[in-house]
Image (spheres, rainbow, N blue to C red):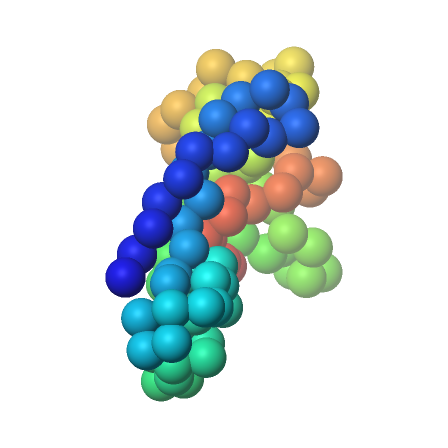
Length: 110
């Protein structure tokens, strides 16, 4: 049986706490993730696979250094970094500049 209760977290927000109640003896109550492990449901569960996409505009130069296009950079217009780059913060399309100090967006590879 699955039981869900609301619990108050440290930052005064509410979250659901899921528990698995074993009905065979009625005495044990485990968190849901532990109950799934105990009963063997997570043994053959596949790990999530992250598919990497090839960067379209970023490339390595002749010395092997990575040139990151502003549109494919974490600090560029498509990135999620809160501290945006002063030269590429609004660049959303490729081939409009880049640098050698940028970090590729997660999920991209060269």
